[in-house]
Length: 119
Length: 114
Image 1 (cartoon, one colour):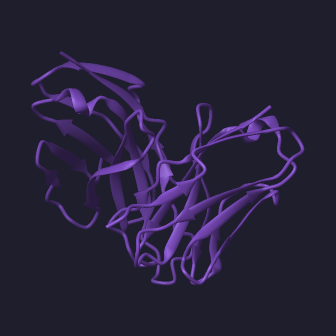
Image 2 (cartoon, rainbow over the protein chains, first blue to last red):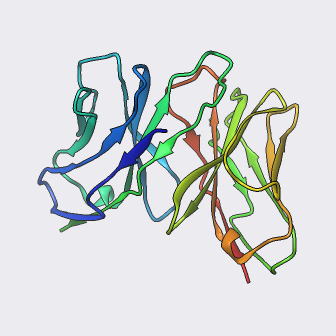
């Protein structure tokens, strides 16, 4: 069974600085996807960034980038130039690639990291 | 376009009652998934529907059920409510079962069982 571990329950960073959130996962699968989601107080889960396991190149979305280390099963999120609006819970999630019938398709989640961006 | 809409936003129910939650996916999305979020267990998969059929189911008791309509809207039902069912229930939609670009989530329904 797959598991996702986020070892930092809480983190804080000063506005405009850079912060890295850690995520490790355990799987015997070779084809899968990794995601970082953000959940602000509004409760809506928002997709931040996505990585396909078969791609060696790290994904980047504006101020957000990942460090994907497949052999080490590590998937950290770096937030550059932190903004007050980045304050939220951040969840790392894993999904195994299934056949197109989607059997057993589901997200496996870490317990989250609460990030506070301080002015 | 409109996002994923979940109704109601909040619910308070008594133990033993039943509850129905609703989810309208993004227009054109045909797959709807449900997740339960609690402080202790985190996020756990409940089930996924596609073309009005349940395709996947998580490890929840039979009291948790769902369905999907021809317009892709989905409902989930919890019968004989227990205190432990208090949670945020999140609905997510995707294009289809081969869509791995990441789900789009609604804002959830906060269920409190007293």
